[in-house]
Image 1 (spheres, rainbow, N blue to C red):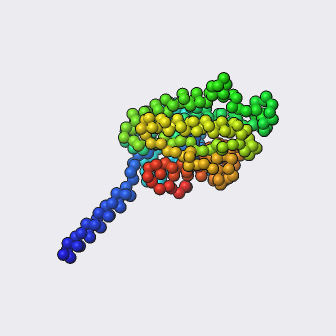
Image 2 (cartoon, rainbow, N blue to C red):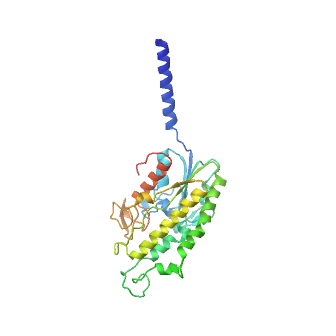
Amino acid sequence: MRRTVFVCLLVAMLACGTAAAASATPAFHEYVALGDSWSADSTVMPTRVATTFAPFGCGQSVGDYPKQVASALGITNFRDATCGSASTVELTRPQGVPFGGVNPPQFDRLTPTTDLVTLGIGGNDIGLAGAITGCLNLLPSLGLPLPAPLGGSCESRWVSGGVDQMSVNIAHAEPLVAAAIEGIRVRSPHATVLVVDYLQGLAPHGCWPYVPMLDGDVRWLRAKLEETNAMLRRVAAAEQVGFVDTYSTSAGHDFCQLPGTNWVEGLLPLTTSPLGLAVPFHPNQLGADHQAGSVLSALGRPSPTAP
């Protein structure tokens, strides 16, 4: 009887040890991150720019969400292809970047053994960044027929005759994002693919002069950002890949919030996350931390501690 009990206990201990070892084994072994500046969490601080995977001009942050995810998952076979200003075009073509560098086609980092891919793309295909900077206003609304930045609305440049050109751009980008996912499948057929959307960087209303945009323009831009994220969600569902929602979970952390609360920077050239130069209208380190946590949550893993 004692021998039977001892054997049972020994088997149980071995089983527990095996389970613990299995849980410690990384679920993924080869991770490639693809995307634009909101995935690179672009920085202009030389001490924060990472050049291991992409040239300096891509502006990759040492603390961007792909690097946090790779670290949290214990993945050493990792390649971060993300680069500022990238569109779906740069997934298959080289991208010239500031300071004379060239980022190779992002898809070049994919292999048949890649088993995890994150994709954050589409904003530059749509022209959203240019629309945001084009909506900056030196003056509040004066009720005069003046264009931005002299107190007039920028929305009128995009909406004419009942046609919203930004919505047209979003519709045109939809098949491009779908083709990108299909391109990933061809190169890495066994990979888990996650489409990562854009943080809720735009406030429900304006906060001029802190961020010098008219209320109506901020509301329009916010609607276009939501339309973009809805497109990304729709494509992910149609292509049967994962979707990471960072938008709905980042409410109250937009560019109108004070430092320490905002996860996306406004127009000010300084940030406290971390302290230094900011890239306007891009995620700061708090935003990158939230992106990383959202990706890990989608994979059923705990959030990391940011570097």
